[in-house]
Length: 263
Image 1 (cartoon, rainbow, N blue to C red):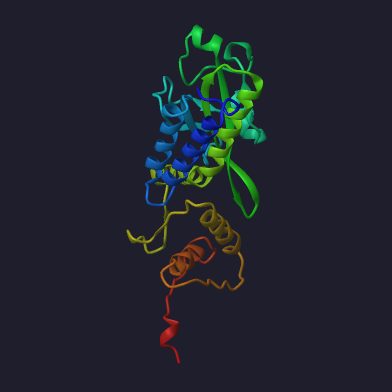
Image 2 (cartoon, rainbow, N blue to C red):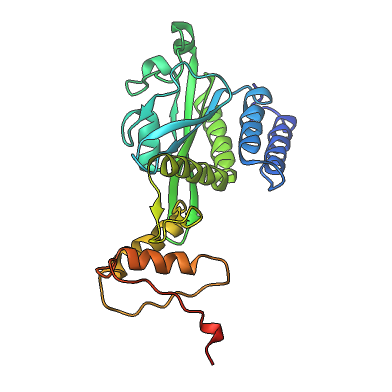
């Protein structure tokens, strides 16, 4: 594997791969295609083994495998924040380097069935994946990979490279989390408006929309007047219906009036 400290050509190789990853993460590529290309670059160009991305399930709070370059032996494995290497990285938002898998008491070898030889001569690096939003930095998942054992300085260089890649991919991984939330929501429940029309469903998936629905729940029980503002087509009528449905007046008539026709 090329090392950042060997020669300038090795550094150029890393920078070239970073440039390609940035191009792959551009909007013209689909979400899964971009992230799969990212994992392929890590595995095929830099010889990281088993690079994979875990995302926090918004419903349970656990971490689940989302994408992996190599087929996982136990893809349904669930990681609890704070437990094991991956859980600790997620909970602390700090990367962890395991210089040799077999020597680390918190390395559990659950997702992939590594043999004794691999455990004795392979390192493991796990870094947090986060996005910056109005509330600050939010960790949404982890990026991990096996890598041949090496000196402490070299492993730190590889870890820094993975942290840079994770930073570049933060927004895409956050979209993976929202995709996971959407799949869970559609599989378990939907919010009907009073009219029960097929096209009158509010699917609150994104964090901003879930916040809006929490505000609806807070405002609905009161007798306060609520003003909904927004561009045409954003769903003001659906929110108004949801407010009525969640209020003590849900059994009364729900009327609609077009203000534009009133002089």
